[in-house]
Image (cartoon, rainbow, N blue to C red):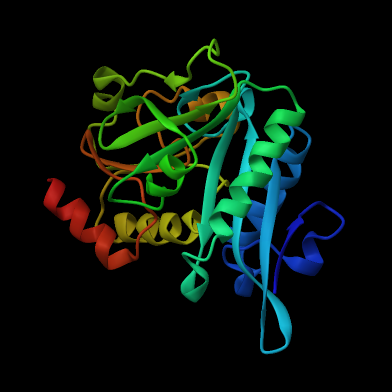
Length: 258
């Protein structure tokens, strides 16, 4: 048994968001909960996949999407629906649940008269989804950008203007040429912990550290540093990572970047 429910302000405390749901009292989750309540006003949809386990329904996946003008990726997609995240975990993968979540997005995008649906993918290095599910549903590659991001779109009309990545700037990256800089937002609840750990590490090692919190969708879209828009680490002017990894992994990447 499985069903999909639409999360809103009224039922969020009952069902909880998917990521870090077992740590809902911690700062990362609370930041996300506050962030998502603001995004509901902009048309964001957050839908949970509930499956029956041990005679009770529990969440084992979700999809988050938003009208393109309000997306938190480095994507120029006004008039489209942009998927931020789509995730199904464990033994529930490859059972059609991802397709059902995707169909929810199609339905909302069509209902709003949008051009279609956009997804940013990556084959390695982070939490962005792989392309297979989207190719299966008729998405086509429309753009790509460094380091390994690819933009796929499913258009509902042949004459739809194609979405694309906002350009990045090597010059902007070079402005952060001393120590560790973290660009982040509250869109991902896993980011808070690693930011705090890196801040403590930098202080202990006497390394210059700065945190750039992206406060709105325009800052995320046009940060000129990284198209992920939600989180990235720069060390001495070099891009290091866009995944909120464990501290040991992150430090290895930072050390190897020097």
